[in-house]
Length: 259
Image (cartoon, rainbow, N blue to C red; front, side, top):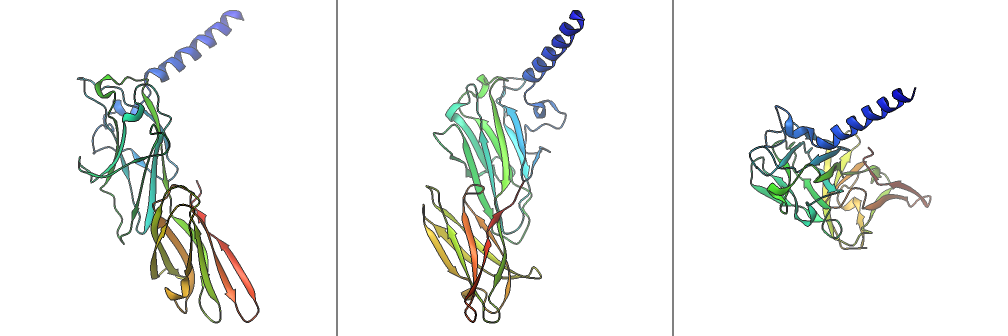
C-alpha cells in the first residue's frame, strides 16, 4: 500500500513538473502564436496563461492574438499576474495585423499590469487587427518562469428599454465612478433592431452625464447600447422613462455583457 501511495505522489509530481516546464503550449504548436498568423483567438471571457520565455535561436518571444471586433462595440484586453523578470517592461499593443502599432496599453496600477481598451465605431466587423504581448525588460533573457495572465472582454453595455413615443420621455443617466476619463458613444436601436441615432459621451472622473434621449430619437422606443473606453464594468447607468400624465417612472438598469 505504501509503495502505491509513493507511486501516485511521484506521478503527480511529474505531471506538475511537466506543466511548469511547459507554461506556454501555444509557442510549440506547428501553428504557433509567435507571428500575426496566430490562430489563438480571443473572445469575451477568454482567460489564458502564457510565458515570454526566449524561443529557439535566442529570439525574444512575441505572443500574438486574434480578436474579432463587432460593429458599434468596445473591448478590453487585460494582462496581469506577471512574474519573474517581465516587470514594468510588459508591452501590450493593438496592431494593424502587422508590426504597425495602432494603440499602446495603459497601466492599471503601478505599471506591472496593463489594460488595452478601444471601440469599433464603424458599421463593419474588424477581423484583421491583432493584439501583441512582449517584454521590454528581459527580452532574450526571459525564461519559462516569466509568465502572465491575459483576459479579454467585450465591454459594450446594453440598456433594454427607452421610450419616447406617446407621452413618455426617457432620460439616460451615466456615471463614471473611476479616477480616469471615459469617452464613447450611445447607440439607439428600434425595437426591430434598426439604428435610429447616436450620441457621444465624455465623462471626467466621478462625473454624471444626463442625456435627454428624445433629442436624439424623438417619437420612437427601443433599446440602447453604449460603446466606451472604460474598463469592463466600470461605468454605471440607467434610463428613466417618465409618464407625465400619471407621474409614473420606469427605471431600466444598464448592464454589461456577462461571462
